[in-house]
Image: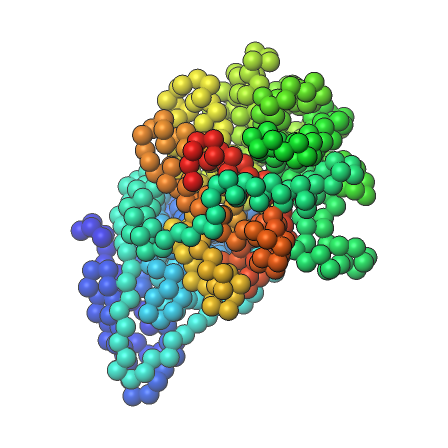
Length: 610
């Protein structure tokens, strides 16, 4: 805390404040109960500051308005003046308090208005009164930041669906004479909203020392296990696909009597070409002809049939074949998914120069470049038949940039199109609000938006050497790191994640909508390592290696490990109360989870790391 920071205030909740003595000493708050009989209560530490149009950030959990007003997916949204029960039922409020374990770093940032400075108030996930919460409010020209012990949420509890749960409220039973010391942190922020990066960097050394990582295996073994998972469990030679999900328990069946394995494959993102390319790369390194054949068959299948508009398709279903992406836009194909698939398809051509693959990539890129607006926007969702752009919103189509850069030698239109797109989408990076990359959350801000941006601007810097792109790559990486856990969440000792000593430092919150940690950030491992080399800033390497260490945990090395089979890798680790109770793990293996670990492992092996 600096001299410019306002002082802390303390409120006793659900009990008479006159029965408590409170003493504030810097960033420490000593609370002593003087009552004659035990009482159940909570303590809230706040700091208030005048504000005009505040911008709030809780890393991994809340970004500005958080949910766009017209978003298809419902989850918490900040809106000034929203204080009615009806608005709260729709998860819209001018005040939010969240369990600390929802945050990648338990801290709430506030900038008081555009171009204005602010404050950040933080705490540990767990304090002397148990789990804690962080929150904010804006009313009557005042922004208030809060830490509450023990934790309570407001106005509702979000559990992953559009039906909110009653707000979680915890209390501590104070005994007469009981005294506790609560610790918080308070930082003064510069006017640039990116100043969170300075604060998070400053906290990292102490957190890293307190929460050591525990990878279970080395890079070569991780690659071997992930590759086996893809081939043994996800690859289906009929017709040549990577099935998206496979059940851990091979005896569990659905209502139709069949196994719970999802009979579907996206062309990119959660399955498809990117992970087939990772498998092909691994197979060539170790000389595994069977794995190489499986990978080639998947890419063959994805490129054998294009949509009528000239691009790759979105999703294949066993029951109906190729069709649109997961979007409410009728016949829509999602730009991020297709862009990422095309990027890896271009990479595949460096390994195998297959004419069908090249034709599919070129047709897809030609179609998208033809639809690009003069301002550089590539369109977020495209009609499968007509090619009409159904949505221009969000920053997801930065995913086309690496593909255009990678194929720049094929057509002299591609690199200029990538540059125009880079310039257009830079506004999202500079506004600290990238959003719309995953198909399943519409225009929510997500960690995947960060990965897409890092890969795009790193590709532009490689191609041009221009400092503008390097600066944007750095800024995008630092925004991405707001989703990356800086500490280990405390799990109950009898939960699966507690029993297996799963450590969350290095894991990414998927999004403020999908609140579970996942490994998708491994997709840009090579870009982050390159960024460290280009800039001489080791921060990018450290955070990349943290993520890679984190997801070498919970790897089934033998059948029966983790109640799974060798090579089965989940996508969801529940570090907070969302979708499932804290401490559980989704018992489905995902093709992308194995694929992204394999990709990062190959990157590490190539560089002689881990």
